[in-house]
Amino acid sequence: MRKSRERSPSTGMEVFKTYKQRGEWVELLFMTQAAKRGLLVSKPWGDSARYDVGVEQDGRFKRVQVKGTDCRVGASYHCILTARKRNAYTAKQIDYFAIYLLSDDVWFIFPAKRLAGKCSVMIGVQREETPHRRYKEAWNLLETRRRVSMREAL
Image 1 (tube, rainbow, N blue to C red):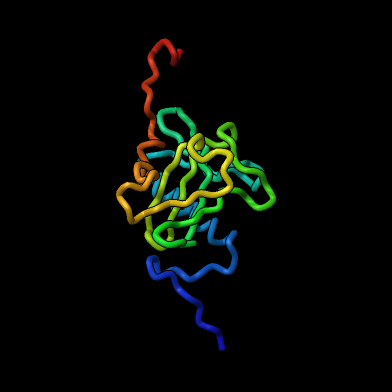
Image 2 (image 1 turned 60 degrees about the horizontal axis):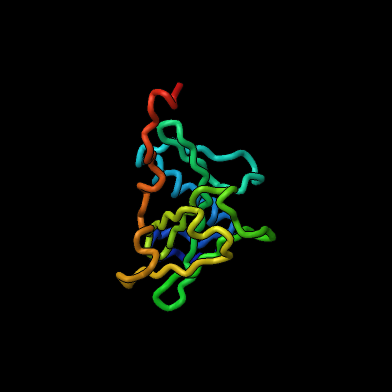
């Protein structure tokens, strides 16, 4: 008889057998959300790149490291930012972190400079004065900000 597996209360998805499987699923969620917002999405082949997903708009390419967490500590979530057996990410390796809070079904988009060099981050979601509030669902950070002049384009 097959044992019934636990399901996530927010998504109804089965709990994954490994963190790698869950991470791949979170990357797919990110790519879907980015594509829905008009960003071109690409995935590097293999596991060698330090970023998980590339997004492009108007010829500008941004490297995104995607993370997911359901590790709650009080009113906050704890997210590990490093890959197994690897050093902390630098702003030269990636441009953004996209962190998905599974239980709340919410994304936080951080510029890499904000979290670079850190091994983890605590993200508060219930208080309005949380320091990370401005990064909640901040998909606009991935959109093109600077217009390219004709002189620069040539």
